Amino acid sequence: MTFASLGLIEPLLRTLEALGYQTPTPVQAEAIPAVLKGRDLMAAAQTGTGKTAGFALPLLQRLTLEGPQVAPNSIRALVLVPTRELAEQVQQSFLTYGEHLPLRSYAVYGGVSINPQMMKLRKGIDVLVATPGRLLDLYRQNAVKFAQLQTLILDEADRMLDLGFSRELDDLFAALPSRRQTLLFSATFSEAIRQMAGELLRDPLSIEVSPRNAAAKSVRQWLVTVDKKRKSELFLHLLRKNRWGQVLVFAKTRKGVDELEGELLRNGIRADAIHGDKPQPTRLRALQRFKDGEVQILVATDVAARGLDIDDLPLVVNLDLPIVAEDYVHRIGRTGRAGASGEALSLVCADEVQLLAAIEVLTGQTLRRVEEPGFEPDHRVPATDASGQVLKKPKKPKQKKDPGGKVHLGRWFDNDEKPAAKAVRKAPAFGKGPAKGAPKGGKPKKP
Ligand code: AMP
Image (cartoon, rainbow, N blue to C red; front, side, top):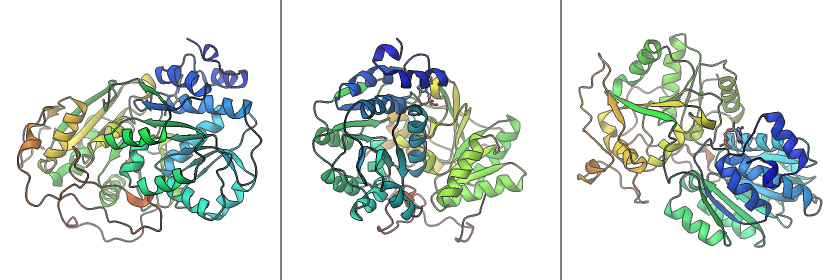
């Protein structure tokens, strides 16, 4: 199958040829013709399967061939994404794929000044990529009008709900024209998302190119059991012993990220960090330095878990397991992209056994366990498997109740993605008070 046989126009085909894309990926093969026909879509695809081009290519084509010129302060297509990094990345994809087309695209998100965004919107934008909170601010200040909107795309829709954007989304949906095309993309589909899809989509084509909630098959996954206090030490040891190249490391909290980054820098290792306390330009620069190979280790909270596309990333390490089991799938999806193979290692301590069990249940596989000589844990991590037996045991009284009642055991998110007007919830250290010996708060270090 070729891109030409899917009905794409010549300027797009020329771009794809220049990019070296020879054949459409499965999600593209299904999505492109359906979107060109104007159908609604509900697509579940693994990360790294090419879903961005799956919606960007046919959308760019429709915007080129159909509809009026964009009016001042108007937009013709809206792509909602959960994080600022993803907004930049998706916008970049629109710029790349639309190179030979006379369309304007732009990204808006919080954490940076709103004024330049308002100025930019004045002329009108064909494709606006946005995080929900900032878009709602712009809408309320009349900087953006939706009357011309013909297509709405929700990318990583489940993540938007996880980040607590459901109120903003409801307000936005109420402001959008009801006659429109809607495409909903997500790597995982919870019941809440299916319900949202039921309300938003009209006779959608369902695409599921991979099993629900499956981790990318091309990623070799394993774990090392270790005591909590020795995790950073173990990471450094494994880094040296295995002569790792570039590694993306996920930690649960901003504090945890800063601590590991500091430890690595003290040991002369080129490291940088991304989390919600860092200003947006610093976050983007850290990501760029990592992508350019200037930095060997990028340490991040779940801000970086979804959507980021890093070429040839061989290894993802979970210094801490994610609180929401679905995030595991997203984190490890940063490696093994576009057909390459990858490796995902988790350092697991006894406190995390239930998180581990939830991940194994979700992915339907028992992770291979290894003990590293010299790092055998004093606090044994109880055996787990994909049956979730451990989850059925009574919970510790100290454990917080999860109002969502899902497989995961609480909610934690890097809540800077929330609109500024909302009270900022501190990220709780799971089931515990603030970590002892943690550095005092204050300004994040500049990379
Ligand atoms: P995505 O899942 O949209 O983030 O895309 C993952 C990676 O696959 C990106 O680096 C794309 O540039 C690349 N890609 C997308 N579609 C194709 C294709 N048909 N052939 C080769 N590479 C692709």
